[in-house]
Image: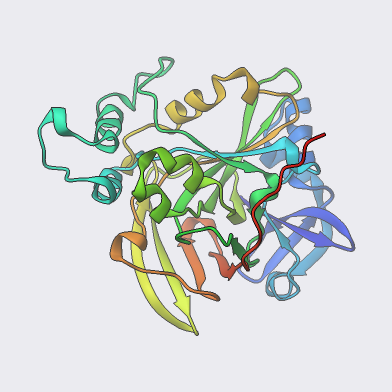
Length: 328
C-alpha cells in the first residue's frame, strides 16, 4: 500500500495510490490516520481502507497544480523533527572517507569515517532485543526544512555545495504514551553541503542544516530487504549525471531496528504527538564524481517499489547581510 498527501479543496488529505495515474482520496491527512490506528490498536492499512472516499483524483494533475505535499506532516512544523544517520550502507565509507583521507592505512591511521563504518559492520546488526553499535547521527531541522515533492530546494547564499543524497526515510508518529510508531517509509533526498563537510569533519553538523525532501509516496507495511534505485541530475532537460544505488537492510551495515533504537533511546525524541523523519543514509553521491550543481538543476530519485520518483529543482538564494543580534 502506498499513500500520498495533497491539498484538496483547501484541506490536507491523504490519498491511496491506485495506479500511476489515479489516487483515491481519504477522509483525513496521514497524521490523523496514524493517530486513529494507534488509538484503535489496528494497522494503518485497515484504517486507510475504512477512510476511503468515493473521490478519485488525477495524479498528474495534482503534480501540475503543485498540490502534492510530503506524505506525512504535522500541522505545527516545530513538532516535526528531521534527523538522519550516515555510514550505514555497505560502500558508504569509501565515498565518505575519500572526502577526508586515504582508506588503505593502518588501524591507528584510520579516518573517523572508517572507524565508524567498521563499528557498524562489526556490530550494527545485533540479535533481536539487544542494542548494536551506535551509528553516526545528525540533526537537519524541524518541519520547516522539509520541501514538498516537485517543489524547489533552496540553497542558502553561504553554502559551498548543493548536493543530493538519495536515501530511504523512516516516518514516525509518537503515541500519547511516548511510544514511537513507524508509519512507513519514503524516498528521501537528504541534501547536504559536501564541500563544507570535506573542509573539516567537525563541520558535518553545519553541512546538514539544509532543506530536504521526501516522498511523494509513503510505503505502508514491510520494507523489502533489497532495493535498487536510480539517482540522476537533469539540466536543461538533459541528464548530466546518473547512477544506480542500493538500499534496504541487505545492503546496509546496520539493521533498521538498530538505527531506530539509537534515535528513539533519547527521551526527548519520544514526546507525545510529535512526527519524526529519519534518513537512513546512502553510498551514492554525485559529489563523489566531481559534479557541481547549478540553478535550475533537477534531482530525480527513483525506487520502483515506491512508485513515482522524488523530483526537486534547485533554487540558489541571493546574498544577504550578516545576522545582527540585538541586545535587550
